[in-house]
Image 1: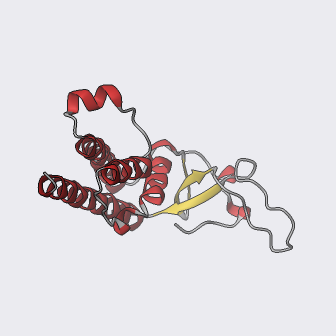
Image 2: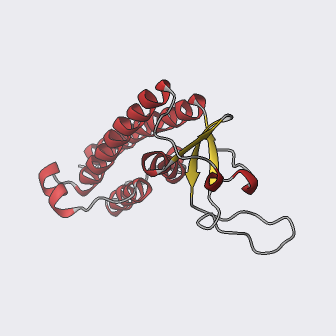
Length: 176
């Protein structure tokens, strides 16, 4: 996502609760797909543990998506199952984008709509320490294409999670 410079940070834009109609549909799709991804990641952890979903839900607490992938891989490794999941390595960034979308505040002006980002620090061209975005928030310009890209990323993560589940299942079955 492209960042605006601090001169047009979200702190100076008017708050809005009205978004372009297409945004509502895309945001809803992203949230539904993300919930599915979280469920499937939990199920992959249960599979790697060799327990059913009821026992798994009792014994495993929900974690961030990237942590669930790491847990599934670590559990599989205990049984000698090593799997390459390079495609899931970027999951933390996808999750951060999803979380910003789910919890962010929207602002608007004549140039469009922006999502306030309070994470990170503005870089200083003078080499001085940057200003935290909690002090001077960023306004991230949002377009439908940005949301479509995030939806595609979440759907790809679901497909990659399904591949991970199959790989664990196949290796577990062949090791018996």
